[in-house]
Amino acid sequence: LPHFLHGDPRLLEGVKGLAPDKELHQMHIDVEPILGQTMVEHVRAQVNGQLIPGENWGWDTWFPHVQSGTYVPIAWFDMISEISDAGADEFKQIYTAHAAEQIFSWFGAAVALICSALLALAVHTRYYYRDGFQDLDDAQSYASNDETDNRVQLA
Image (cartoon, rainbow, N blue to C red; front, side, top):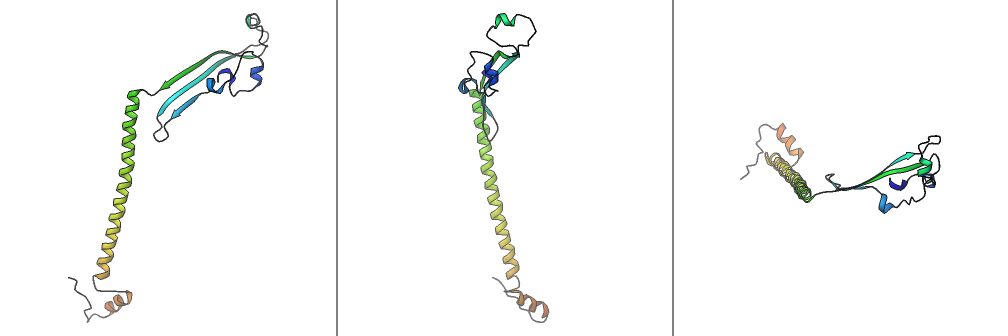
């Protein structure tokens, strides 16, 4: 990160004038958590080089205040990207569709649960009252007594 923000403090010792500031040098990306859409990205990066002792290209003349072997910033970039108005409108449509999908999913699950409960109640009622059985003992006595017709007629 620029100005060696969050870097080893020894990196700052070799170069005068560096002042890491979180507000100026921090990188951040805002992502919408449900759909993962990037809303804002603020990317800051720094390119560094190391001044190696023994290489004589004049760095000691250009940078007399810099110690040998020090990493020095060569350039840093500040790139900002925000979602456009058209992109925001498209995101709103996608988000609305996603919200509607969630609502219909819950609604469909509720309807399926209600239908299943009604079907179970109908099946239970049909088999419970079909032959007039009120309990298991009635069913067993009916099965063992072929001559007697214990069925109850339902209106």
